[in-house]
Image 1 (cartoon, rainbow, N blue to C red):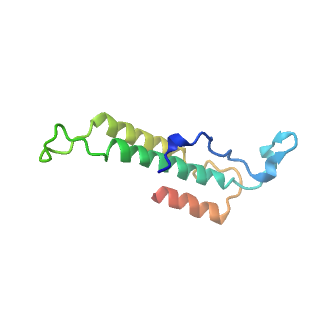
Image 2 (image 1 turned 180 degrees about the vertical axis):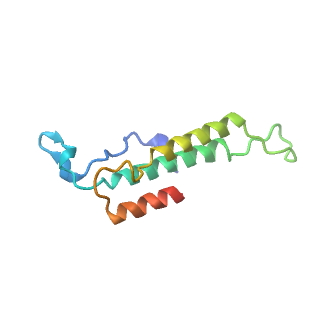
Image 3 (image 1 turned 30 degrees about the horizontal axis):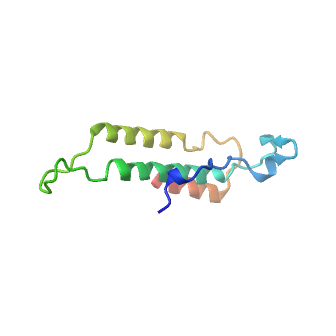
Amino acid sequence: MLSDNDIDQDLPLEVNDECITDDGIDERLSSVTCPMTTANAHMKLIRIMDTIRRNVLNPCKSGGDQSQAYMVDYARIIKAENELETWFTSLPSDSNFNKPISNDLIKCVIFLYVG
């Protein structure tokens, strides 16, 4: 199975194609918010969920006795909560957009908030 550690690529830049010129990136040329913003936010959420799956939901029973309670280090839970809070506060909100928003982008953001 492919894991995040197998990928050495950064997430794509959150720049509309129309902003890429021969001289570099000029965000002033953009008329709408970039759809990659929601795609990157989704990828970051998937990474957090994978971390939770590995570190919190992965059963760690003390000893070999199957009758013992499921145990999770509380610090791992706090770390996961902090990562989710940081992710959630970094999501674009209506007040953060200074450009018109397409209906498709609004739908993507709503799905991310629900996720």
